[in-house]
Length: 345
Image (cartoon, rainbow, N blue to C red; front, side, top):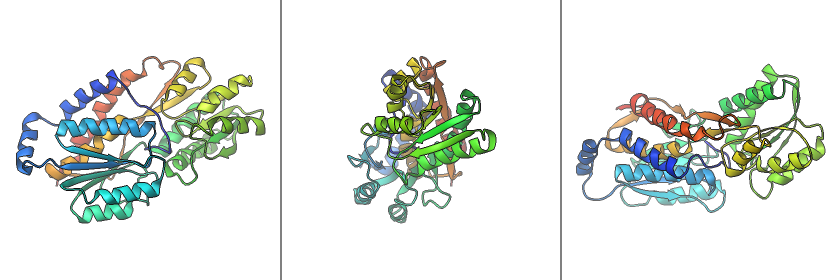
């Protein structure tokens, strides 16, 4: 669902409203009471793990906490203090020894890094699901995420229109090897090649998706390509530097971002960032608990290997009102999962 860094999906009152909305839709009170009687007095444990602490992790955790509260289960949310896929694997393996563990969901940046521990969890009879970095051969029976390649294509289409189908683009991306960033680039590149061949990608700069490097990346891009007209930031922090560097240099550049961190939203309002897209992060966190819960206690199984959680664009036309889309989009996603994805086994 995300690369190394993303940004906040919803906050404050929007999250509270979502908690009430999704709780009501997800599980009726009578069904929940019956399931609680079946499992006895010991509160079941559901684990969620993420590869590092960042704004996306915060929103996913909020959603997972809301689901745990609604379903009356204990949530153990585990993440390394810095972005570290190998450390995520270690803490996920350790979590398998937790008493009364019934469900495990992971957010994967590398599609293969957690396969071993997921196989081990499955062998123990633990209900598992995966968010992000999905592959057809994944051990998890269902994976839900933004379709990053499709999202990259949509960004390219919008960007090409703003650039009048011509110009030079620099891509500012995350850590090398992050599959989610790679898919964003793959979709973006494929669309331009097929539909806007006069737009040239002149450079791809890695390691731009954090506060320490985002400004340097924008400065590097402008120094190497003074005639730059497009800048595609594939992570939540990667556009932050562009929002300040390009205006200070007096350059008008079409800047495409990912997610809605405060700097991105401020940049859209000021015109230094052209647009961004928002993912269903809070809802993704909710599904990390809901889906394995329904597998463990309702006897439901996923009928689809991959669920596209979707995106929506934010630009100057809706930057002040886009959060009104959060509730209906989240309700629609959860209803889809409950009505179409999860069926009796």
